[in-house]
Length: 245
Picture 1 (cartoon, helix red, strand yellow):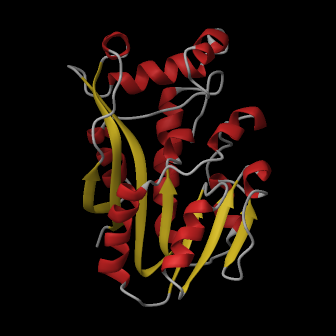
Picture 2 (picture 1 turned 120 degrees about the vertical axis):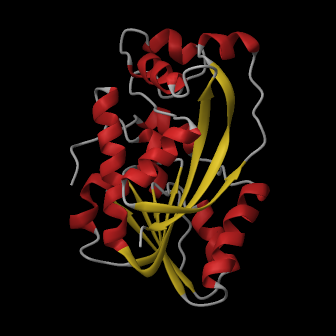
C-alpha cells in the first residue's frame, strides 16, 4: 500500500471527461491484445478508468471480455454507461490490495494514470509511481499484461528536466493562478510527466519487462514554451508490459 496521493477537485476533473485513445492509439493497443489474447475470454482492469469510454470500446470489440473500472472520482465514474460485463469501483490505487481482495486480471490498463500519482515532493511522487507499478503483478493472471499510455517529455540536454520543471510549476500553491491561466488544469495539485528513458527506468525497476513500445507523432508546441520548459520532444508513448520472468 502507498500513502495517500493528491486528488484533483471536481472542477479540474471535469476536463478529463474525455477519451484520449484516438483511432491511431486504439490500433496500437488492439494489436497487442490480438497478439497475446486473440479471441479468447479475458478479464481486464482499467485503473483510473474515469468515464469508461475506453472500457466500452474494448467490450464492444471483444464480446468475451469482462471489465472492471476503478477510479477515485465519483464524478467521472457516474458518467459510465451500464453494461452487463462491466463493474465500476470507487477507490484509488493506494487501496487496491483491500479493494480488489485478491482478484486477478489478464490485462491491467493505466491510460495516463501514472502522471497523476502525485505527492508533496518530486522524490515521493517517484516512489508512489514505483509502488503503483510494483503492485500490478499481484493482480495479474499467469498470462497477464499491463498496458500503459503516457505523455513523453524529453529534454534538450538534461533528459528528464522538463519533468521536474512541470512538476514544480503545477504543484506550487503560490503559482497556481498564473499556471492555470497558462493552461495547466492540474495547477495547485501537480502533474509529473517524464521522459521516455525515465518511464522505461521506472517500469524496469518495478520488475516489469517492456515487450513493445510505440510512439505517437510529435506534438506541436511553441518554441518559447519549449525553451522555457527545456522540451526537445513531446508525444504519447505506449508500453506493453509483463512481469519479468
